Length: 249
Image 1: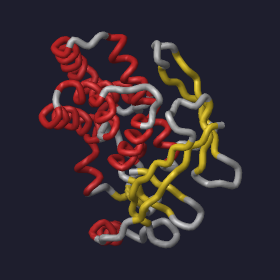
Image 2 (image 1 turned 180 degrees about the vertical axis):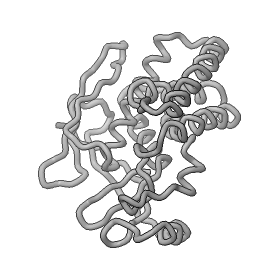
Image 3 (image 1 turned 120 degrees about the vertical axis):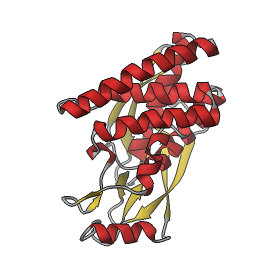
Image 4 (image 1 turned 90 degrees about the vertical axis):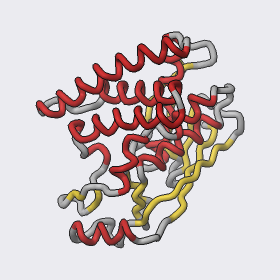
């Protein structure tokens, strides 16, 4: 779960909703991309599905735990289960990209100081390396093709996190170009226009990209007095639609 604060309301946005927005970003790409990549981007956080339905409570913030506050010992097994679900439901190519995105996260960002966390990360990476080798071979996918797809998914993931309010611009990002070259991007928020962003160079077909999602409004003040109040909120039907705008720089 992550949180978007527009100054008047705080929205809790699930990892699955954030992934949906990442998919919207790649579906607008100027280059024709394969459906397995597009679909994998839309559901790359499938491992969080069960947790997002019943999130844990952080008494220090008075909110559900931010996804960054959840330890690898908890979410690494969830990621592995997400890969298994993707394989069972949609096949090897989608599952392979979900697996590789998890590996990228664990190699770059996961905290490894705690022994249980380090063991969970190592178990994930070892198990998924075997899985990825098998399925890349079965599908006949080259390292070059997989690296490009993995990098595009990671780019869309980072942009989506910014558009959902988690990563704070300006951001310097990278994505592969049509010929596999590395293209460097700059994402910034327009002054005085919350959640309206500019991106340079421009990688999309249209001049403006508007993404849309749905979140859960937090109570006034953006926090709950206790876990019971959070559980009651989770059972309530209230939702709110939000959008973010990307424009040429």
